Amino acid sequence: MPELPEVETIKEALKKTIKGAVIQSVTVRKRQFREIIPADFERRIENTTICQIYRKAKYIIIELNNGLSLIWHLGMSGRVKICDALPDVLDKHDHIIFQTSKGVIIYNDARRFGLMAYCESDNLNTHHLFGRTGIEPFDDLLTPQYFLKQIKHKKIPIKTALLDQSIINGIGNIYASESLYEAEISPLRPCCDISDDEADRLIAAIRKTLNKAIAAGGSTLRDYRQPDGSMGYFQNQHCVYNKTGQRCPDCTCDIQKSGGIKRIIQCGRSTFYCEQRQK
Image 1 (tube, helix red, strand yellow):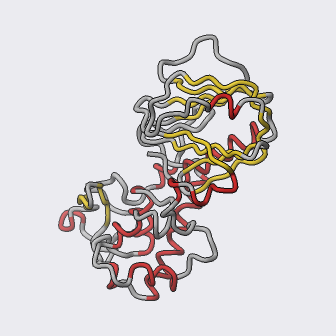
Image 2 (image 1 turned 90 degrees about the horizontal axis):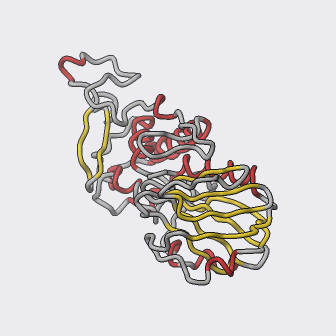
Image 3 (image 1 turned 90 degrees about the vertical axis):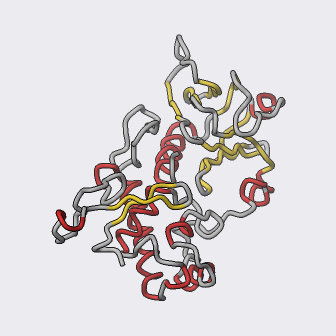
C-alpha cells in the first residue's frame, strides 16, 4: 500500500501537471471500490476547475472551484497515470479517467481496494474518512509531549502505536520499521516504557526517514510506480525493512552469532529490526 512518501510523490506530480486545469470529462468504468463511486460523481465533477491539490494523511485531496473536494485513496494496488492524451487502448484495470485541459489522469487499480469520493470542501475535516485522523508527522504540534500523552498509558508495542493513524497519520509498515531503527528503539518496547528522550529521538527519526523517502520518490516493492511509470528508489536505502538475516548498516556484531536482522509479526504485519542496535 502506498504510504505517506509515495502519496506525497504522486500528489506533487499531479500538482505540477493539472493544478488550474478544467476537468472536461469524467469516465467511470467500474464503480465498485472500497466505497461505491456515487451515481452523480461524473455530473458533480465535470466542468470544474482544479484549484488546489494536497495530501491529507494517505489521501490525495483535489479541491474544485464548485465547493467540492475529491478524496482519493490508492488502496493496496492503485496507480495514477498522467498522459498527454487519452490512450488508444485502455488497460483492463484503468477504471476512472479524467480528461482535463492540461492532460489525462487515469486511476488504475487491479484490486479495487482504493477509494474515490467527494464532499463539500468546508466539511472535509469532519468527513467520516478523517474522523480519527491524528497529527501530520511534519506538523509543529507533533512534539514529544503530545506523543507521550497519547501513548503513556498504552502497553502495546511502540511499533503498533506508530501504525495507529489516530496518533500520527500517514506512517505505514515500512516507515515505522525504518524510523524505529533510526531512533535505535526496539519495536517490541511497550509504549508506557518510552522516555522523553526516546520520544524526541523517535519524532526526529520519523521526519528524517520520511523526508529521505520523499526525496527518493518513495519505495517500490510491488505495485507502486510514480505517475510517469518509474519506480521510487527508497527501497535501495532501507536499513532493515525486508532484509531478514542481513547485517544492518550500523551493526558491528558477529552476524554468525546474532543472525542479522530479525523479522517478527506484530498485529498481522511484518516488523524488521536489529536487536543489537535497537533496545
